[in-house]
Structure formats: C-alpha cells, structure tokens
Image 1 (cartoon, one colour):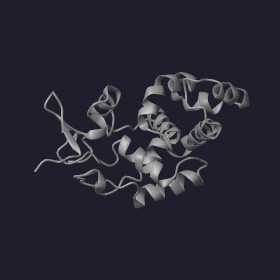
Image 2: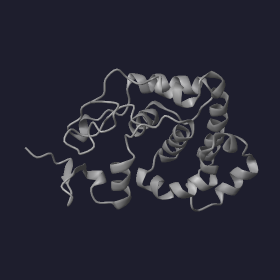
Image 3: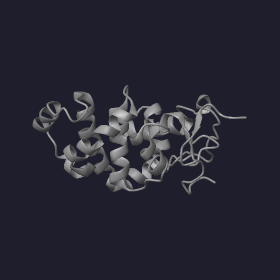
Image 4: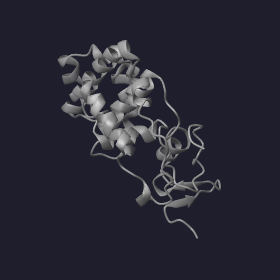
Length: 198
C-alpha cells in the first residue's frame, strides 16, 4: 500500500512530500536534517535558527541562512555574545534576514548563555544529555510528535540556564534536526541513516 506522505523522486528515492519538489528543501532533507550535530557552533546555530523559524516556514529560514551566518559571525557564540544594541538596530534594517527584534535579541542572549555553559560542559553536551532512550517510527506525518518528555525537560533546563525562545516544540524540532531523534518516515531513503538510531 502506497503512502501518500511519501513521494518517489526521479532518482528513485522516497522523500516526504515537503522535501519532494523544492530544491532547497530537498537538499536540506537529503544531506542535513537528522545528521548528528555535536559541536558548540553547530548546535548554537540550530538553536538560533529554530527560534527564528517560530511561526514561519523552515523554507524561509533556509533561504535566509547564508545571510544569518554572515550577520551572526558564522554563529560563533563569543562574537554574537559581544553584540550590543547598535548591532540589533543594524540587523533590524537588514532585509536579508528575518527582522524580529525579540528573535535577534534572543540570539544574543542565547550566545551569552552558551558561553556561560562552557564552564559546565558546554551547550552540545547539555543538549545531547537529553537524548531519549528510543525514537519514534512514524509512518505518516500524523504520527510525528511535536514534543516529548525530553524536549520539555530540555526546554526547562535551557531556560534555567538563561536561554530564551527554547520552548518544548522548538526543542523537539532541534532534536529532530541534530539527529537526537529520527522522525524520518518509515520508507524514506533517510530513515535510519544518522548512525544514532538503527
């Protein structure tokens, strides 16, 4: 029985509908989404971008990612932590990124919290310490969770550590993006490819 949530591409590979036709989303799905990210800069970048995505499409964020990487100094936490009000005002005038004051300020706040975490193991180690003992096996989009006990606990801990824009749903999206859970649909060519889950 065919799965309407999966599309077989011209290359013979099965992808979810959302990644089947748009080139940018397909490249992201095929090569990035769910691939383990365990370094501080990589995790900080994804925490930041997931916050900017809140209320918007991921396609919008991906299209603006090169500009985000430029204005946020390659997501180097120390460089972003050093940004001040003048930088925030400058970014609010930069049409290449998502111009939302609260989200821009959150990036700076979270960079400072990331630097502070270095004394206690670091951001990547903290985030990965909330990895669940099992991963979902969704066959349809309706089966994919949007939160979990672990994402709620991670959200609480990051807030306790001074982070903002890190709600349970955003943290679950982060966990999917960096390979902590595998929510690739059963039947997708990416299912089980992260090396984290078999």
